[in-house]
Length: 83
Image 1 (cartoon, one colour):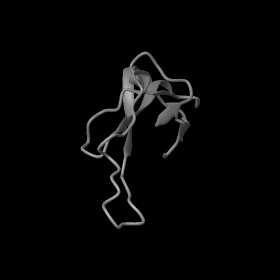
Image 2 (cartoon, helix red, strand yellow):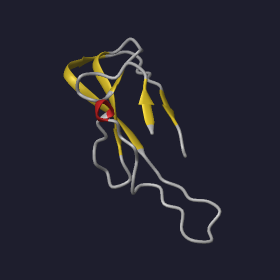
Image 3 (cartoon, rainbow, N blue to C red):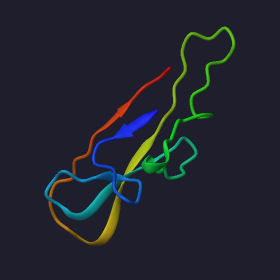
């Protein structure tokens, strides 16, 4: 389960840096955007095969413009839990 800090109405992570009109969008393992307002669980992304002791999943983050982007830093945070 992902829990984003400062999730925007677009379902992205809000920028806590100085750049304007920029969010951080997460993509799942198939490259589809993750809407963090919808309770994304990652079901199907991370599967532990029978008799396996580890598994991995690769997620991607990208800049998402909400208007004319203005220069500056971009920062965002996210917590996750595996159960």
